[in-house]
Length: 433
Image (cartoon, rainbow, N blue to C red; front, side, top):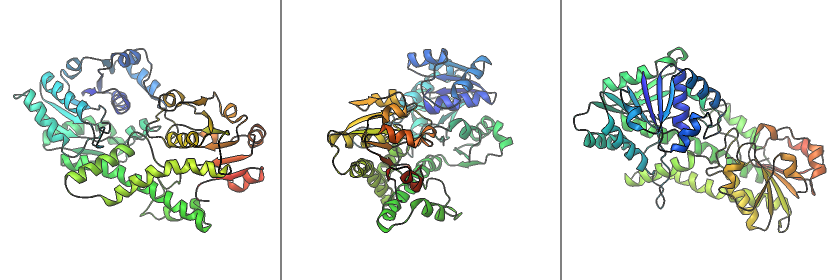
């Protein structure tokens, strides 16, 4: 199959490289000429484990190409994926579909024969209808189908998620387009990945409903963690106790400083805006968004409380800046609100993250960025672990204690065993334990 991927950001690049690895002929298109130049030089615009090797292998094999010319990429394509950004719109939180609509118009003008236009970007219900209208307006005689094919990629595990998906959702209004999509995903047949074919609007809603539900699980266990602290229970045991129930499941039941990233914050907001437009309020999701927003600064206050309630003139070492491990993504990371809360209270912050420092510099000022965990810890009055990178899971506690001015350790990810840390001489604070 010949595939055009419009947009070479996180979703487009990972999807395009994986499709090429399946044996398809893929062209990734992006308006950002500097990004395309870097990709042609083998430089990835994002950090994702294994992506650079995957891209290099398929470029060398001639299955993966990059261009700034949309018409070149679209010519002769069987499937054209729209994988451009849909950020939250300023002012009202709706998904900004400017790039989606612009891509649809250009695709319509460039179509050379029958093709399936696929919305891979996360888009509100009804976007497929609008994409179809825009293409039809640009090319009244064109033959095409419009399909919704939402992505379910986890940052840090995106390649494996693409190649071994829980499910493939195809929202289609006609059999011809559906058959093209089945051929696109035919290489996954051996993995027995279930394909769910629905109407287009249903597929669009599946993506939002899925992310809202996962955000709800995270927020639920965070509130249970707060209750655990009040009543003397252990949230890790509570999580395990309820997660072993097959109706509930253990994933996304890890208490922490709140969710962030490129998906959950904007997708929950977009779902709420859609629900308001259609007069079908989503009260649970409204509560989830509100609780998560307030939690992040509350984690900053938790660190302040662990340091005796006054941090003016003190230094806090923060390990972990990205919203999760194995990514350089700082979008809506809890670390942002945590650090700003500490700074507002008069603290100085030293910080280290294995991959996120350059992105953090764009959103956090007056932070002393360090080149390793121990250089961040040295001389600090407290250590706070905000993101659970593997290299933070087995710190030399004796060395940490010797470097800290005060033996205060605040573990916002519960990666250490309380008794062991306290036995090492620390004043240890964690979540819900």
